[in-house]
Image (cartoon, rainbow, N blue to C red; front, side):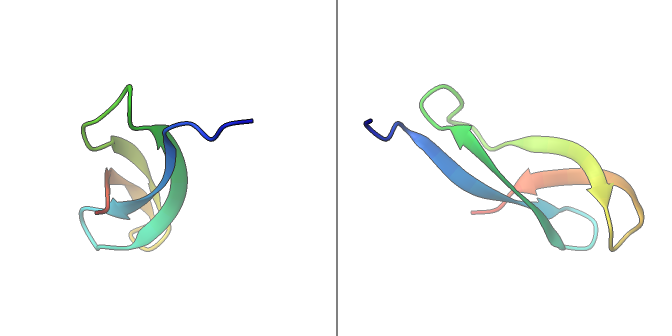
Length: 53
């Protein structure tokens, strides 16, 4: 099976800088950086996480 254009990315908290999540995305369909609101264990609240690069 051929490997597609799916790559692993690391999500980084915009408040404290903690790298808490690893996920994947298809860079062919979504070329822009990923932003998600997730729970940060360091801040102990929901914050905005952005794709680290």
